[in-house]
Image 1 (spheres, rainbow, N blue to C red):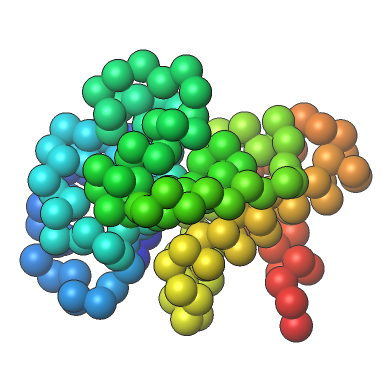
Image 2 (image 1 turned 120 degrees about the vertical axis):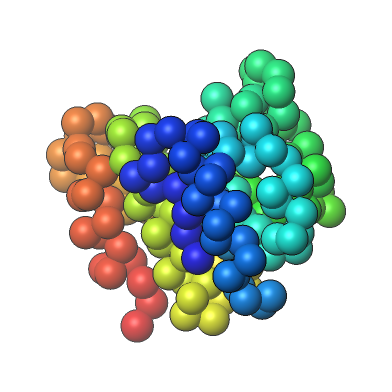
Length: 177
C-alpha cells in the first residue's frame, strides 16, 4: 500500500492514516511518502503497527521532519530513521535497512529533483513489492530503476528539465523481461 503521493496537508494525512491503519492486513507492506511522512513525524506511534513492513521515502527535509532536527548529511539521518521506525528507507540514491545495511544506487542525477519524481519512485517501489519482491530488495531495485530512468532521460533531453511523468514512462524498458 502506498500512502502519501498527492496529499497536501500533514494533518489530513494523519487523519487518513489513523482511519486506514485498522483496515491494513497484517502482512501488507506500507510505503509512506510526502505528507504521510509529515503525519508520521507529527505522531511517530502511528507507525508502531507497521514496524518491520514499512518503507519510507524521505528527502532531506522530510527526514529532518521525522527526526525533529535539521539534516545536513542524509546518510546518518536515514540510518536513524530506519532504526527508529524499523523501516526500509530510500532517499538520496541510497537504500537503508533497519539493521544498518546501506546500498548505494550509482545512477540518477539532478533531473530527478523535479516535483512529483518521488511519487514515481513510491509507485515503483509499491509495484515491485506488490509483484512479490522482498521489501528491501524491491525498494533497492525500484530505486535503481527510477534513477536509471533519470539517466536515460538525461541522455536524450539533458540533465534537467524533464517532467515527473517522464521517468515513469522509462520504467518498462528498464524492467527485465
